[in-house]
Image 1 (cartoon, rainbow, N blue to C red):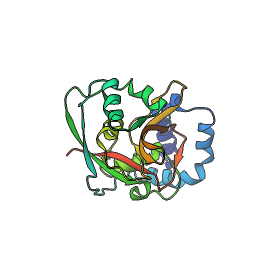
Image 2 (image 1 turned 120 degrees about the vertical axis):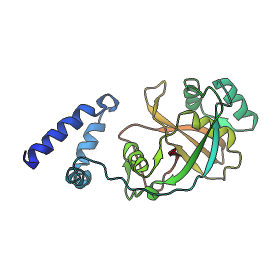
Image 3 (image 1 turned 45 degrees about the horizontal axis):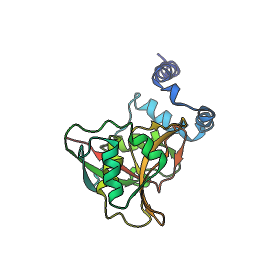
Length: 213
């Protein structure tokens, strides 16, 4: 089969696996408009036989959190607020939908900037996640957002951490991920945009899980 035929075959297979239902209005057009930037990466993908090149990098464990210490949204909220921390309206709504670990489980977290993952320009959440997964990191369970906020008592002023879980849909139909931050308004568990087309710069700070060997 010619290289063009192989490319069409691969693109057809990719088309079947794309979660089209996740795309919102204008997001697909944004992806089409971005072809000039992602085209060279796709060419390299084809040259590599349709395989993603894995770049192994070592990142130190930033801290550990324990999941399953609380078994309900109310228990988490009470523990977080008893320490003077705050929960936004959107974060509280999602907290009520989380499936919590049945028993205490420790997870190692890695704190990385997009630039640590090789990011040089604004990229989508999916692109950033793909970079992290290729470097030995994994997405975290959604409970990590609430567990981190509950157990992270010494967060420095001005720190803003995006929790790299699968996105969730809030009551307004938006896809979000948790973030934990400390600013002049207090120490917060809040949410941030998680749509496939939303983009973050290389300076964005993400919390991933260290992959278990």
